[in-house]
Length: 130
Image (spheres, rainbow, N blue to C red):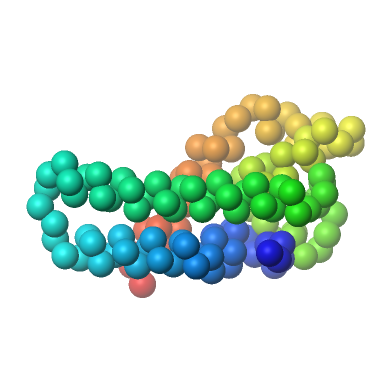
């Protein structure tokens, strides 16, 4: 796997490029476009496909955290465009670096997961209007 270079959001390049993500998105699109009945089976199928996407998201984060050293998001010019919330999510060990007190504070404050979720929702809205 390659690191998220020159990307503001990991989703712009790495996440959507994963084969399992593309399969799950395609399956979800086909399923929803089929206008399934509003029932338990539909809800369970939708949740199954969304769970597959969340699983891939967690796997991607774990792979990046294992691949890259603590603090990778702070120094390298290739990562300067990375969104702050994604840096907090993907480079949590940066908070353990002594000169990264502000990063540690931001990570511990824990408002970044909600901000990250909001950014993902906005990305979804932007992509759906294309």
